[in-house]
Length: 138
Image (cartoon, rainbow, N blue to C red):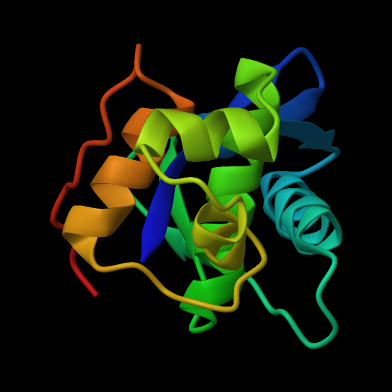
């Protein structure tokens, strides 16, 4: 799984963003900016051994991804829930379940959801946003 990002020049610096994770940073060079965003996302994931890779794209676009799908998915769900200002119990309620652990296991990276389940989880934390899948070249 990969998430789209954008790197662009702002004055003398390079700005970089990964909108779905709401991560923004900058660097003196394009390479530095891409390394900074990878470091920021790895820090946010807060999981020993988690490694994020950056993939070049066309123009100012690039992608970030990891072989550790559980941690990357957990970060996506946690950031979306925090952005929405929801508690774990509020998300569980939106999903129609009584135990917060039903949702929390995905946010903690203990389970990796199917595409259908990820869509349901994302809709529960961000009902005003769509989760769009885009095919990318490997």
